[in-house]
Amino acid sequence: MDSRVLIYEKDGGIAWVTLNRPDVLNALNMAMRDELWQVLHALHDDPDVAVAIFRGAGEQAFSAGADISEFGTAPSVVEARRARRERDLWGYMLAIDKPLIAAIHGFALGAGVELSMCCDLRIAAEDARLGLPEVSLAYIPSAGGTQLLPRTVSPGLAMGLILSGDAIDAQEALRIGLVQRVVPRQRLYAEAEALARQLMTRGPLALRYAKEALTQGLDLPLAEGLALEARLARLVLASRDAREGLRAQQEGRAPQFLGV
Ligand code: COA
Image 1: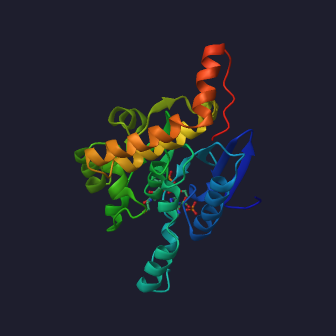
Image 2 (image 1 turned 30 degrees about the vertical axis):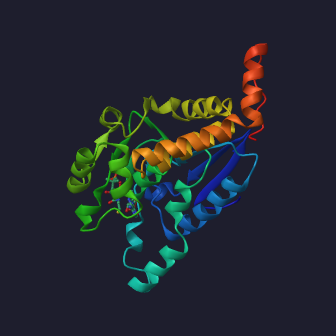
C-alpha cells in the first residue's frame, strides 16, 4: 500500500506497519486511523502475513498520541459516537488472531501507548518514554487505555499512571511489565524481527489459540476460562499441525506447519 501517513510493507511473512508522520511525532490523526483500519484488514486477511510489527518513523517517537490539532473538530458528539460505533478500530485490532508486536522508541504517549497495548508483545528501545497524559488535557484515555492498562500491569499501577498522566522510562516500563524487553535503540527493529521470526517457527494454529485463550480468558470467570482452554486445546490436538509437530520431533527435523 502506498500512503503518506502509514507505511505497510511485507517481508517474508512479516508485515511492517510504520506510523509515518515524524514531523508531528507520529500523532494519530483521522487519516492515519483510516489507513490503519485498511491495513489491519489487510494483515488479518492476508495468508502470507504471519506476524505484524508496528513502529514509528523518525528518531523521536513511536507516537505522541492522538493528534491534538484535531481535538474538537468532529462535526458533533453524536456524529463522533456514531463513527466510533461503526468502526471499532481498537476492538478490531484486539481481535486479530495473529501475533502483533510493537517496537517502541522515543515518545509513546496516549493513543501511542494504547496502540501498543493492542499488540501482544512490546519491545522498547532504551530511549522510550511511555505515558497516558490525557487527564492533563482534562480528557481520559479513550483508545482502550483505561481497560487495557489494568489488564497489562497491576490495577494500582495503572491507576497511578492514568491519574498522574506522568510518563515513565523504558526500564520502569519493563519493571512493571508494560513492555517485555528493553534493547539499545539501534537494535530495536532487529530484535523485533528476530522475535517475529521465532514466532513464525511455532505452530500458527497453536499461536492463534493460545492468544485467544489468554485474551478472552482474562474477561471470563476461572471455570469458563478453563473450559475455553480445554476446547481450544482439543481443537489444536486434532489439527494436522499437532500431528506434524509430533512427527517432526520424532524424526529430529524442523516442522512444516500449515496452520490447519
Ligand atoms: N498531536 C499533534 N501534534 C503533536 C503531538 C500530538 N499529540 N505531539 C507532538 N506534536 C507536534 C508538535 O506540535 C510539534 O509540531 P511543530 O513542530 O509544528 O510545532 C512537533 O510535533 C514536535 O513536538 P514538540 O512538542 O516540539 O517536541 P518536544 O520534544 O519538545 O516535546 C512531547 C515532545 C511529546 C513532550 C510534546 O510534543 C507533547 O507533549 N505532545 C503532546 C502529547 C500528548 O498530550 N499526547 C496525548 C494526546 S491525548
